Length: 333
Image (cartoon, rainbow, N blue to C red; front, side, top):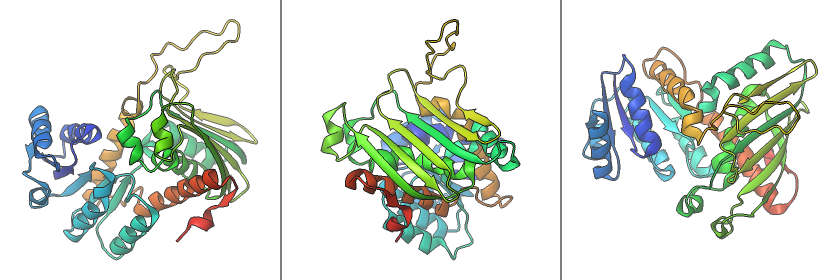
C-alpha cells in the first residue's frame, strides 16, 4: 500500500513513522503547508516528501492520513473522498458543528470510507472495559468516572484556537463514555474555573472543568478535566456497576499517591503526555485503518461518531457559560 500523510507536526510525524513500520505499507509520502517541515520530516524518517498538498494528492495513494491543523480537515477530507481515497483524519472533523454537518452531508452518499481518530477506542484497557459492560458481568451500570488531567497547559496560541477545554480535551472522554457504555448522553451540567495562566481567560476558556452527564438509561457519568496536574498525565475511566467494577488506566505509571499506611507507591514514572500513554493505541488505530483502506473492514469510528462527541462537548460549553443543565438535543442542528 502507498499511503499519504498531510501534516508533519508532532503527531503527524509519529503517524508517518508508524505507517512506515507496517509490512503492508510499501511507501509513505508526506506533505505540509510548510514544505520545509515536510522535507525535514521525510529526511528524518526515510520517507518521500511531496512538494505540496496538491502534489500529495497526485501521488497515486491507496489511503490518506490527515494530521494537519483543524481548519484544514474539512477540505482535505472532502478532497480525498472526491478522489476516491480512503481517509483517516485526526479529530475533529471540523472546528464546529455546522462545519462537521457540512462534511457529513457531502460524504454521506460516497462509497469511500472515512475514519476519525479517537485513539482511546483502540486502547486495550478501554476495549476491555467495553467488553465487560457488554458481557453483563458488571450488572447494570450506575456510574462512570472519567478523567483527563494534563500535567501542564499547551501554549497560549494553541489554547486561543483549540475550541476550549470541552471540545479539545473532554471530547475524548465523551466519546469513550459512549463507546464503553453503549449508551447515549441526553443531558449535561458543566462548570469550569481558572486558577492558572491568564491566557485561558483571554481565550474565553477554562483550565479546569467538571461535567455530570446523564445517559439515556439513567446512568451518571462524571468527567474531570484540567491542564494543571503536576503529578503527571492522568487518564482513567472507572466503570461501576451493580455487580462489579473495572478501572482503565490504573497501572504502574498512574500518577497517584496513596497516603494510607503500608501502601507502597506506584513505581512510575508517570506518563509525560498523551503520545506516550497511548502509543500502542495509535499503532492499533492506524493498523485498523489499513484494513479500512484495503476494503477488509468498515470504518470503526466514522464522522457521525465524532459528531455525537462534539454535540456533548458543545452542550457542556453552553452549560458552563449559562450555568444550567443543558439537554444535548438543544445543540443539535
